[in-house]
Structures are given as C-alpha cells and as structure tokens.
Amino acid sequence: MELILKEDVQNLGFKDDLVTVKNGFGRNYLIPRGLAMLATPSAKKVLAENLRQKAHKEKKIVDEANKQAEALKQLEIKIPAKVGTGDKLFGSVTTIDLAAALEKAGQEVDKKYISIKGGAVKRTGPYNASIRLHREVVLELPFEVIAEAKK
Image (cartoon, rainbow, N blue to C red; front, side, top):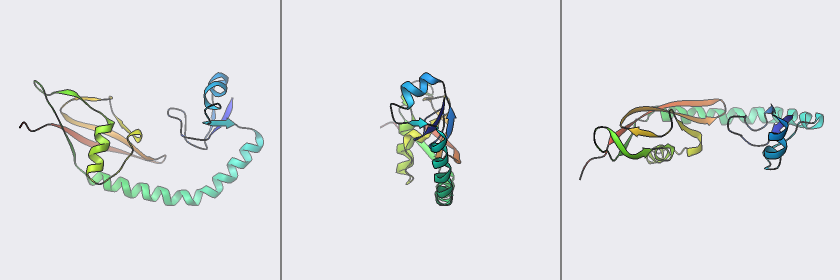
C-alpha cells in the first residue's frame, strides 16, 4: 500500500514522504490516526506541487538548523548525577536530562529529537547523543556524565 505521510513517523519516514507499507499497518494505524493518506495519482500531483513550492522555503530552515548545529558543537555538556559505589549512577541519565542541560546552556532542543546511543546512561563517563535538528541536519553531540559534588 502506497501512502503519503502527513507527519514524521519514527522508523518509517518524514512528512511528505511517499512510503510503501503493509496494508494492515496503513489501514489500521496510519490512516485512522491522521499520520498518512492514500497515494492516489491526484494526491501525488498535489504533493509534487507542494514540494516544489516548499523547496526554497526549506533552504532557509536548513540554514537555521546548520547554525544551531554549529552552536551546539561549541558546547561542552557535563551532566552531574548522583553516584553510588564505583561509577554506577542512582537512576539514569536520559534524553530529558540532556535536553535540560542543553536548555541551561542556552540551546533549546526538544527531547524527542535526541537519541542517546545505547539508551539510558547508567554509569559516569563520556557518551554520544544524536540530535536531529532537521531531516537533513543530524548532529553527533558528545557529553559527559560526572559525579555530583557531595554536600
């Protein structure tokens, strides 16, 4: 079944992408939730025209995303966390904590666009996160989890 995505769908595609999915997934999940519509010939023509009009607007958005990526590369992120014996954390450091640390540093990034390699962090040390600022701009951001100073 060919569908045109109306919104970004994780692990499937981005808005305005033409995707092929199994009939049940399209009919029972994507279309009822308003995430996609059938890719009829007329819908494909409308999509092509919309993409043509959107192309020059998109350039400005990509440039802004690249500027933000350059600003993020300059940051050195250290996230303090409570530590037990050795380097093991009480709890874990997640994308929420990383988004809060970025916001504290003056760069606002939504947590749903951040993914930490290997999931949640449970030990101190250096890690990498992938931040998707735009469909064409993905940044690898190194950060470090450090032990919180004891009072």
